[in-house]
Image (cartoon, rainbow, N blue to C red):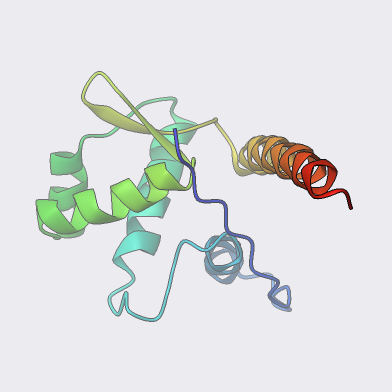
Length: 132
């Protein structure tokens, strides 16, 4: 499985507003961008967080109806969240990979460490083959 891990260093929000923190969180892990004018991905992410609190999944149709978005828009953003390793699909429903954001970052950290270990190993093999 290919997974795109993106981490963007952005100044932490100064204010205590939960929406600002959620937006910062999503921007920091590369989920939201300027092309998403109506913040569809952010809104989908919030629906998934809320569903995760109740330990329940949500269908793309339910998300589309809840947020008044096309199913195609929902699927586009859900696929982006799945590619980032943040969302999983089981039994026709989408779930956050883990039940809270702190655990999600711990899982992303593990993914990142595995990826860096693989890069380091291959770099060593290349250096050895080149006699460096």
